[in-house]
Image (cartoon, rainbow, N blue to C red; front, side, top):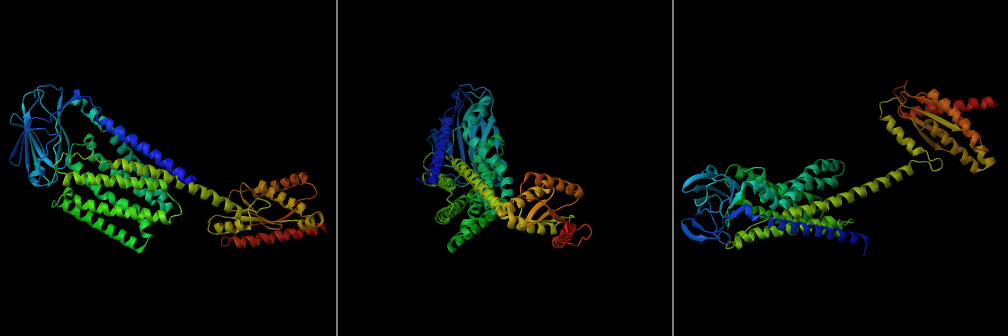
Length: 559
């Protein structure tokens, strides 16, 4: 088995173990509440649904017919004699305004104004403080349904001790709370980082999509699990936040696969463009209808599900195309996407089957999409780390190749190619720059009489002298043969006289260390401090000319 396949299997196994642990821990939390903290008001109800009465109803098994807009449900029972301290009524309602009566006296109302105006009511948990002397009183709850096919079952109200209400709620939802908080914070932190990376390298645009998608899914899931109740009791805020985040989620999923689809076959481009156009138009239509209170977002959910299916088709096509044509097999990401698609498809199937097909049964929908998103995010992190590792390896390899291309193999200082590149940089600079040209004397004599080994020693020794003298302030280069140059990209503040004195000292020291050869050199310096219009080529010619004159003067002295 290849190393890549082993790594893929190992990552897959770890993720599966992690998901199994999360699922088990989540469901264990559901059954880990102290029953002394609450009383379930599930049995003993008298129900009136659109004029039809049901006696001795148990809400755990009671399934009312599909409710439509303006339906009214009245449910009443006698409060239990058992006393709960600091009593709070925990009530879950779906797209319904409601009124609460004790002994036929109105005690609490919610969203009645929105219901009267036909606006969004929303759904979620209400925590209602009730009188301490509730025991034996008649409780009546009237639900005013505000959407078609709003629900298929009614959750039993809970009589709760307020001191334990939020603690138990957090315990009960600790795993989705932890997962969604992680996704939200992760997405917020990743977004600016991904923007920076994507500006430098377009392939990291996928990370931008992942960061936004992570935040949006977490917001939707926090509303879906009613964790939003920890932050606000406003049903409208919850409804708008949940549906808007759900409606825009597929957009970022589609953008994630844009590069694969647009680089694919012609029919793939057509499929992507069509899906993108439908999605954008549906977003504009649904948001407009909601804004003008013509049709609520919840009523257009079936259309959004069709768009999600189209996006899923794009995802599958993009994955298959990528696996067939890409030389880099991103197995962790593919695994994460497949798991995400599977969980999303299961979620959508459960929701629609429970609401529209098996509507004669008690249906409690709990989404697992946040776990699918978490797996997708984990695989993206793995892929991101691999991508960064590959980029660093490529950068190191490229740096090594550039170093070899710009380094003289004999002396290990910069070569002529590097010198010419620095010429171009200096010509684009507005600083005063200069250079010193050197001609190493007696190299031909050393090669002819003492051999090339001694000639190479002379060249290397002189390069060492130049590097020791000018390496900290300039760029020593070997132009070829016995010609050397030191470039100064900025001569401001450089004491050339002091450096020249140090050069002579270093030559004397080096001559005492090597045997058989002796370093002497002709020098010529020039810069553009006087002739501002001069370019590097002009300075080089002037320095080379001065070096040649110095060489001629040295020969005349020897004669």
